[in-house]
Image (cartoon, one colour):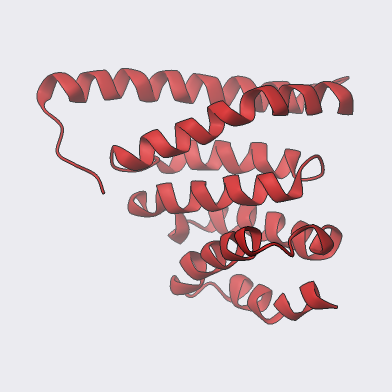
Length: 165
């Protein structure tokens, strides 16, 4: 879905990616801060989730999410899963789709981050992902990483039956 950018647009997109990166690093620092309460995290997440969704959609239209930004995004999502398993699953699927063109799914750190996230979903929040949209998002994530042949992801696929127990 990406299109070729003109020279002026490339510079604008570069500046926009810089802003997005700064936004993500700011969120990552906030959610990692000592003394940051669950209530504060919940409020910040609710206020910034629309921005995160917009960011994913925008970069996907412009050619994809760079792998370093995807790493930062997944770090944030792993910190937020306990506050909103359904919403973070949709965000994670968006990150995986948007960063596929950058090769995020073939990075071993990405596999670790995604494995941590999916493990949390399957272990702690399986009752929260019974809706078709969440199931589709989970399958999208596993498909992208499964195509790369990661054994960790293949083990997660074998655990999908746990969702229905």
